Image (cartoon, rainbow, N blue to C red; front, side, top):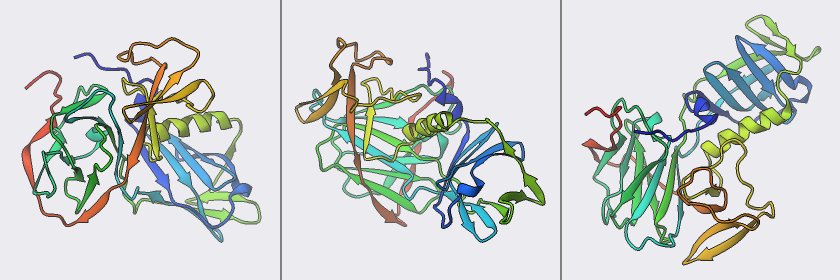
Length: 311
């Protein structure tokens, strides 16, 4: 099986990602880069921060209360983000692209006429490996609703398709332990950060602002929570720099209710070409209803089976 390259972001997808909650006091006096237990901690003047390590990337903000600086992991309120668009060609069923679903024990129900939920199945088989990109399901069912859950959790996320969408992208957002946090001490008079009795020294020229912005952009495109999602017909969201559909290079068009952007200055390319930038689809976010303690059984099967070609 030939795997689709995931470019530089493929490295990040093996890492642990965290986002952090907002804070009360301004961090401008402690802004800078610090060596932190083998990692690099970047604190910005606007209370945002990131941490880089060999096996981790942390993004978020800093909470400052007096001489205490606390980094708190943020767990997204909804671990699944569903985007949809009308299709110019599809007249029955739908297409669903699954992104990052192999990172957890994710469950789904996309049965025909599934107005009530009583069963779900795993999105990926246990110990799935050799996973290609993209993972696309050609679904023949007429779905009024989609249900997603994480096995062992009490919440089920119900997405209703009232818009007549037939082309979907669903993202799983990494969930981290919300009790995990890092506590630092602030020497107020000298604006020094202290961790376990040791002063964290600022690093000079460790990361430029443009490098910080690039990493944040890559993360936000891979784990999007925005109202719109943009990619080409081959599901390339151009993780390195993204595509600016409002740059003036693209013209927004509509056909059969489907919206997409066409490059005004270059000829149309092959829709199957992963690198083609001549056409960019626009997907709209679908907001879920959260079902608590919804009973269901888990089927002994999965939507995708990836096992390096072995049964």
